[in-house]
Amino acid sequence: MQLTDRAKTVDRRPMTFLESLYLWSIAKGMATTLKHLFRKKATIEYPEEKRPFSPVFRGLHVLNRDAEGRENCTACGLCAVACPAEAITMEAAERLPSEANLYREEKYAAKYEINMLRCIFCGLCEEACPKDAIYLSQTFAPANYGRKGFIYKKEELLIPHPIQQKEAYEKALGERKPTVNA
Amino acid sequence: MNMLAIDIWFIIEKVALIATIIGLSFFIAMYTTYAERKVAAWLQDRRGPNRAGPFGLFQPLADGGKLFFKEEIIPLTSNRFLFILGPALAMITALITSTVIPWGASYVDGTTNIALQVADVDMGILVVFGIVSVGVYGIMIGGWSSNNKFSLMAAIRGASQMVSYELPMGLALIAVLLMTGSLKMSAIVSHQIEHGWHIFYQPLGFIIFFVCALAECNRTPFDLPEAENELNFGYHQEYSSMKLGFYLFAEYINMFISSAVMATLYFGGYDIPFVNESTWGLSPLLFSAMSFAVLMAKVLFFLFVFIWIRWTIPRFRYDQLMNLGWKKLIPLALVNMLLTAALTLWLNN
Image 1 (cartoon, chains in turn yellow, red):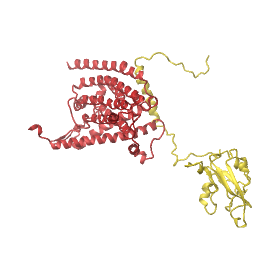
Image 2 (tube, rainbow over the protein chains, first blue to last red):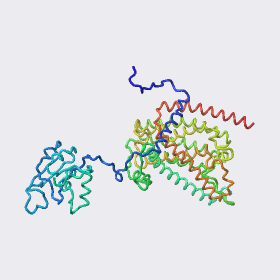
Image 3 (tube, rainbow over the protein chains, first blue to last red):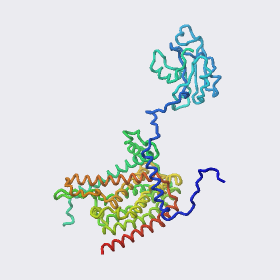
Image 4 (cartoon, each protein chain N blue to C red):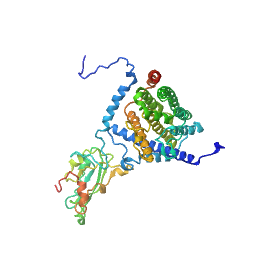
């Protein structure tokens, strides 16, 4: 029964003397490899050259600030609830009157940690967040020497200040511009 | 007292030549490892080493430095003396072979005549063969003294392979010698300059010689002694640090020397094809340098072919290896030799 029209019958006759010298087959093989010598190389030289990401790429998390540089997060905990990997922990605190320029609303996250080893980069925290405070950037997880280094604190997550560190802010924002001040 | 009259300039000349050739062998071997990785990468659509220095040119230095700083391990159950002798022997035999190869046309300026050849002995090519046969002891001793079953297996394979492939190699060579009528390397080259390259008269002989040269150098498809996947790197499995480096280096020097031998025997040595460069009236220095460069170009081409073959075809099975050697190459070489002998006799009468 013929299953496919691409099947090839194998020639099982014993090799002739000339064939058993392998010279012709080796020459054919060498012609094939010689062609590859002039092909375009498939390598992307990583640190200098980077592959473009898809617009929906989900990398490391960023905690967002509004246009005046105030933190968006109100420590409501919805992201932690949404997280299927249980990677997010936070502690809430009440804003003091003098801190109005630091936090956008009366409640803020005193502590905010993401365990990058647990995180599966699904982006559900981003979807859950009502304040546009957390989103996934286009940088991907860097290397570290210990497991401790993979638990990202607020300092590592927070986006640079949009006014004081304008350039770093633009860079961290990447190509995905989140809606500021929703 | 004539025998004791030592020509001091002669000694200086030869020592300088030896030092240059050994240095050159090391340099070429070093950069053959680089070329090996680069060509391998290109044949596989990759880029190869390009981090150390421009185009990765310092990569061999980095590799060599790494080997020097590695921990040196001598297994407790090994035979210490033989264990150290193995790589030394491999290296020494690889280097000695270069003595009889004429590296270029002699530098003739008035009365001074400096041959670019360490020793133009009467039995030139036999010296190469003799030393190459000793080279197998490097592998044998190394593999045996490691006291490791894989290494021993590899050593036995290596020895049997070398012995079986020396036969057709010698037979192919006899055809060349029948045409030249001399074992002298310089005579072989000058014969080719006069009568044309041997490759045109002995294509079959050259192919046999080339296949055997691959086998003698333990290059793919004949790299059974160091089969990575079946024998855990074979005879140099227990070696570390620079002793391993010596083995690997000796292999590349062997490649370089056998390329030079093939260029000398079949491709006219330092001769430029289709032209008679001796009538150009070049200055003697330029003439010698050019002939040397021509030989080097041929050698580099052969080195490339060695590498090209390695990254094209897989390793032979042991029975295929023996079949090819004893049932195919030896009969072919015998036929080639008899034909050449008959034709030489007929044409000379």
